[in-house]
Amino acid sequence: MAEFDTIRTATGTRTAQIDAGLRAHMNKVYGTMSVGMLITALGAWAISGLAVTTDPSAAAAELPNGTMLSSLGATLYLSPLKWVVMLAPLAFIFLGWGALLRRGSAAAVQLGFFAFAALIGISLSSIFLVFTSFSIIQTFIVTSIAFAGLSLFGYTTKKDISGWGSFLIMGVIGLIVAMIINIFLQSPAMMFAISAIGVLIFAGLTAFYTQEIKNTYVAHAAQGDQEWLDKAAYDGALNLYISFLNMFQFLLMFMGQQE
Image (cartoon, rainbow, N blue to C red; front, side, top):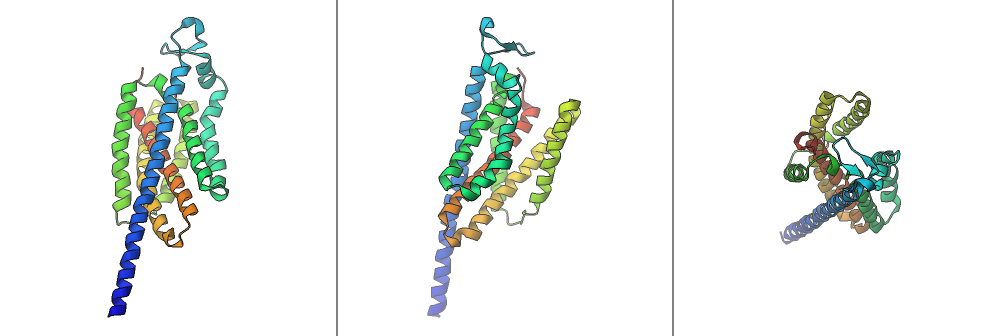
């Protein structure tokens, strides 16, 4: 009996340690993601301010809505460099992030995440030239509320939603293909459908990634590899960051009021 009590106490202690570690791990994920979002927001706002001018003599170009672009704005949004600005974050994700996770230190992975957030800030800066500040803030608040609910669901649900992953990733690939096609078609109806489906897909991915982060920590916590756990936290932060960002952009298509 005494031996059974000892085993039960040890098991309970270990469970409590994992629970405490999981809370710290999730706090690190959400904290890192929040810092990344702040970097993106400040970067986008700063670049958009530098990209416009109110002095006609200093304007390098003018948008259809009457916004005058500085030389920096014309370079970022109208020159061939705009493709570099658009594609650099994708190149980082598909070509650099996996290698950084495998070979880099936890500090290098963290720096890579923040560098990616800064790149997104540059590529996202143009929304301040298209949409009103009020609608951007409003959409951000709505996205934050939706994200919090979806992430909470992913964390607390007892249902295994790991099967969602492959289906949702296939949906993302389909979205990318449809968006590329619509660059040439310029169909408002197709853009509406893409935005609606995009919101649903990244809503699902938010819940999926949250559960995956939780399950991954629980499965590996006993190994005590803190370096790996730190990198896993930054990888989880990146996945949730991308889900939040895409939900925000697709919702902005519905809620955003143009300048």
